[in-house]
Length: 268
Ligand SMILES: NC(=O)c1ccc[n+]([C@@H]2O[C@H](COP(=O)([O-])OP(=O)(O)OC[C@H]3O[C@@H](n4cnc5c(N)ncnc54)[C@H](O)[C@@H]3O)[C@@H](O)[C@H]2O)c1
Image (cartoon, rainbow, N blue to C red; front, side):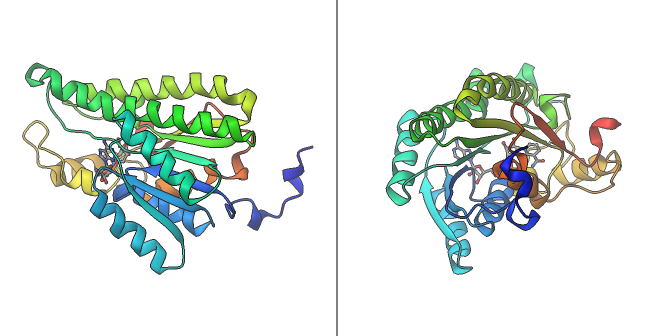
């Protein structure tokens, strides 16, 4: 029987004494995840391309008494990623959790897509997760105390949600495959690797979404809601609560899994 089975339920989600790096944490899903992990007691590094917005998000957490550090970084760039983890370890002595959340989803039909647009989506969504996981994995292996890596995929890792996202769907299918293989590779080190596949979540990124097939983003969301069995668009905290479970000891026997959090959308 695992020693965790004797742990009181209120302690299972505690992250006191642990450090987490969350990418794309200035807004949307990443910001909500950073908030929940910090509330559970983790010291959280909020990494984002938008350094000013990350500072603001970290400032809000600090004003609530949480431990938060903002770092400007483009996850697609090796140097930025190396500097991000250097800054994290200069702040706290050990790394326990990585959430690869930074992602972009510019809608463009393939026949109109430039190779630059295609590459940028792969570089942020897939290469970024690789670079951060490699860095975090090396640090966690060296520490010898395990860890948790969480990749934010999408229902588009399993099934397309709309036309114009072929580059995005390729990146998210890729991230799911990456998750499974990395889970195998890191299991001997006690490092768990899982994914969360969100359905439609109300975030600044979705609000800013370019029109898809000439439909505005809010109309697209309304049409999407009609197809969700729980009949609402998801809130960033719906994903953050699942990230808290995957980051914590509550999921200590889970690795290589993808949890779909979509209000039942994929059932339809
Ligand atoms: N919102 C949804 O409906 C939805 C659904 C499924 C999956 N997802 C995934 O969830 C993640 C977050 O989505 P969101 O809706 O919160 O997005 P968002 O656009 O609201 O926020 C994304 C954040 O990531 C940052 N970012 C973008 N590129 C970056 C880079 N290269 N390096 C570092 N930071 C970068 C942005 O500055 C922003 O702060 C993405 O991976 C997305 O694919 C979102």
